[in-house]
Image 1 (tube, rainbow, N blue to C red):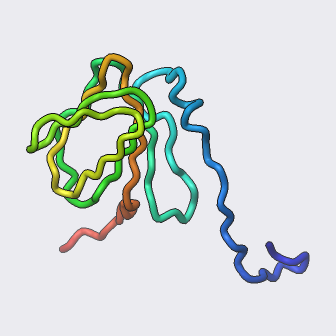
Image 2: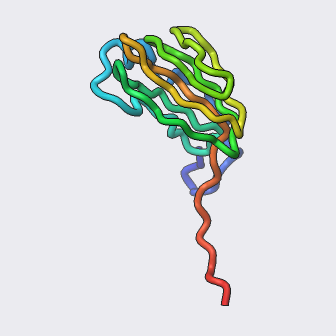
Length: 130
């Protein structure tokens, strides 16, 4: 906070705060997709709460640069990787190391999960080499 004369003082200490109630988000999700996204300025992490309705999938993909933690917050489903299918249920915490191939499928009750990973750097505009 600055003083009335316009000079600024030392930076304020960041405050921990509750961002959302995940159970409220997942009790009756409106649709598939991102239910919540971490959007705090200056953050070092990216995080999303995502919902897949029953029978929906996230196709096979590889994240080449980032490790991802996935926490199942509601429902159940399956993660498929090189090791085959692994069941996912509420409370399950999954580590998806960078470079791992994976797909997700929601079960009969759908699948809602939190993902957390290091924040990707913003896009950089570069001049064209001549």
